[in-house]
Image 1 (tube, rainbow, N blue to C red):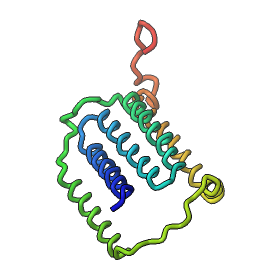
Image 2 (cartoon, rainbow, N blue to C red; image 1 turned 45 degrees about the vertical axis):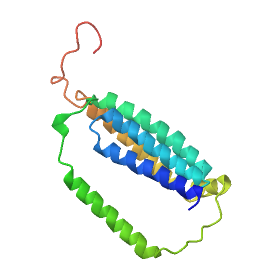
Image 3 (cartoon, rainbow, N blue to C red; image 1 turned 30 degrees about the vertical axis):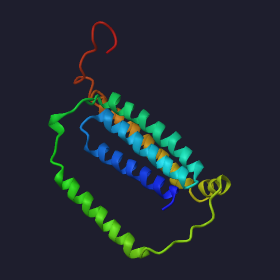
Image 4 (cartoon, one colour; image 1 turned 90 degrees about the horizontal axis):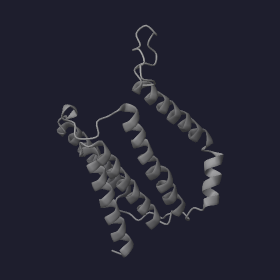
Amino acid sequence: MTGVDVLLLALGAVAVGAGVLVVTTRHLVRAGLYLVVCLGALAGLYLVLTAELVAWVQVLIYVGAVVVLLLFAVMLTRAPIGASDDLDRPGWPAALIGGGAGLGLAALLVDAFRWTRVDLPDPGTAERLGEQMFGSWVLPFEVLSVLLLAALVGAIVLSRPDIGRPAADRPAPAAGGRR
């Protein structure tokens, strides 16, 4: 076992541990911070695998955007930041389904590769990645951008109960100025 293997295992353990903490914590802000740790560990995995461009895209887009998205979600939905007892559910169904899916995927992986060594293709370059991204993957990126825009507009509409109500049902504005 080489140093690269140890580093991959350590970063993988950090990513999995932070991912478990994301779904088990009852604090919204802590879940977002654990998600940042998980995505940062994934960026470290990409760096170890010599995919520097993908690692920096991971850091810039996902790690940076997750923090902004979390702040938008907290502000727009007026969600409680601390622990919330009324949203607590039993965790055993999710653990059972997640564990079963994980074991099924592990069995599928072992059955597919039978612990054989797989020859990797030549490392990618930014030029080849750009050709693929702007050649055959343009439409999925555009569809994703429209989907994210629709989700943002939907979050704004859901956070504002006065949008869409008739004028007679809306509460009167406060006398001191804007609400």
